[in-house]
Amino acid sequence: HGHKWADSGPTTRLTPHIVATVGVQEYRNTIERAVQPGNAVLEVGCHLGTSTAMLHDRAAYNQDRKEQGGGEGYCIGVDIGASIIEGARKRNPGVFFAVGDAWRTADLLRIQQEFLQTAQGHCDDNQDNERRQRRTIGFDVVYIDVGGLSGSNGLLEALTLISALEHALEPRCLVMKSLGLRRLSSTLMPFWRCPERQQQEELQQFQKGGSVHEKQSS
Image (tube, rainbow, N blue to C red; front, side, top):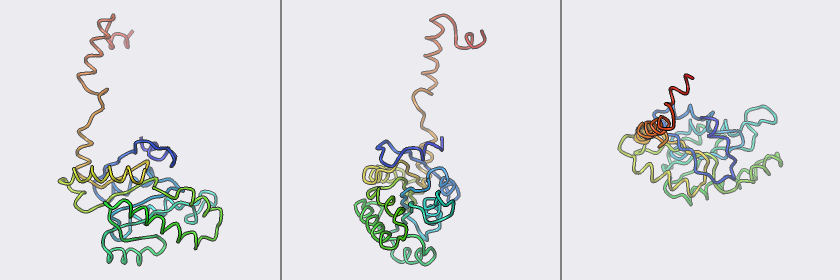
């Protein structure tokens, strides 16, 4: 189902796909499916910016020129620590980083506006800049790697943060590093897959004139 993470357009207001991951590698392995060239992406809890840079490279891929960089997409990295952001900027000079709190969603939108204004002043390609400005509020994809939420005891806080970011930023996909969320997702089951419901349907089918298995073999 990975293709669906990226199929919905940025203006479509739908319930976002929520992807729970465990560990750095699994978190980064989602990038190719969740992020498409031209997307507006945010990573909250960017740390030293390694994942943010990977997200930015994916979003900023120029499809017209078939080359890395120069596209309309981007990723913004946000972390609460000023020293962390300073280190991320030094390691990844081509990516925009800012000090911000994941829980202060209005600040995240202001950071996006700051980035767009900065990008407009430095962009030489008017066409790319014009397309980038089309989505000036909110993000297509949000990545979340916040300390305290990635462990097994941060489930309630993780769900609360996802809800806040979903309503404020309106992404089509949220990817969170969270063991608790991953465990929860592994125990959930849609109603149509419940064994009791399947048994009930088979009983109804049998009462109508034969079991499902009999019809399949006939």
